[in-house]
Length: 154
Image (tube, rainbow, N blue to C red; front, side, top):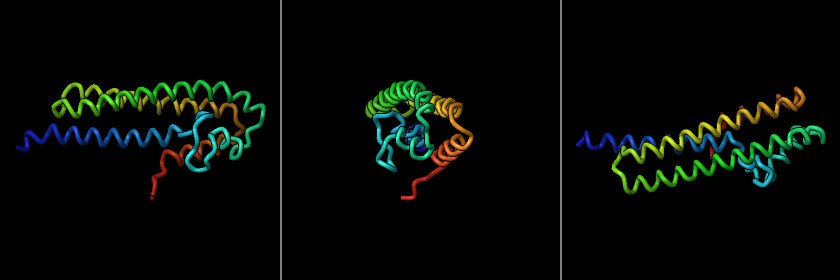
């Protein structure tokens, strides 16, 4: 009996790890980072947050706009990949045996896309830093660090 539980436990563990990774990605990829999404804390956009917290100048905004546009497009495409892979995983969990190749493929697709989103997000922050003052860069770095390490206590 315990031999049959092994694949089931592996699948449950993989799904839980995938969910935890998705949560981490969502926290670190700045929900509301594109101009049409809302942030959780202020109800405004990330663009609004930049202006209020970092005191972005009009010149900086002009230089950051193309970076924001590219990142928003990349993020949207990667989030679609994560969603499709999640849908594939959900379907596979209903129809495949525990630890089956379709489940493995869906988990790999989710993990690959989540890793890509993390990489793109960090690259985006680094590109932004190049156009900020040292004080602004420090505030952005601090906010990013807190976003990555913050745990909801609710």
